[in-house]
Length: 243
Image 1 (cartoon, rainbow, N blue to C red):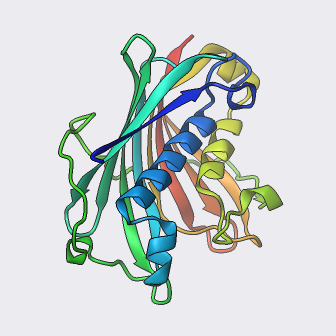
Image 2: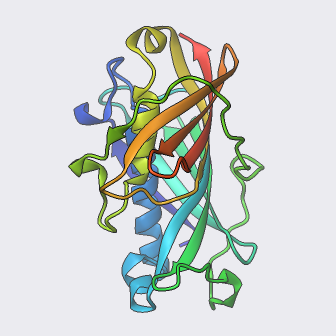
Image 3: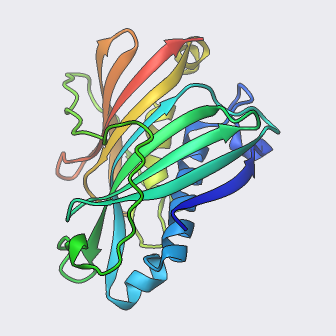
């Protein structure tokens, strides 16, 4: 099954205050279909667990032409673009009922050894799937760290922000970043491009803050910083357009 497709609908709890698919639920849908397809291909969570290995999302690039609206039906498709030995590349395409591509994304994943936390070379895994179509024609790249003198406000990790691996949930980082912008900013601007590097694992006892740098009116750098060691757990580049 080179491409994996799933018909979805924008449920009421998937939308933002503008009645469109929220950034975090867009990400959760991408993450969920990736898990499903990996399982179908024989490289899913439970299969890797038997070998004491696990998947880690490393990089993500998403470009949004438009967001599905409340109640709108659409199709999400995904496929594996193979591996360069370390990264496994996976693309995504959101398609509306008229066959138009409305959101495109690409991601880079690593497989780590559960005990040593070292990277497993994927070209050593027999039968790793390859389907070479590239939805964006590029991979997610390294994101620069934001530079800012603003005093950071650290808040504790909350119960619902911890995932089954007992780490900070990947999608919750995006929620923290989106929520760091005030209502007035969101009223005037809409996110159209997101590039993220996932760097470190957040833990239940951590306190986190969002650091920001404005590159231009419509382009920002953000990171989620841990208070105990001042380490960046993720870095993100966000492009916005006026509503």
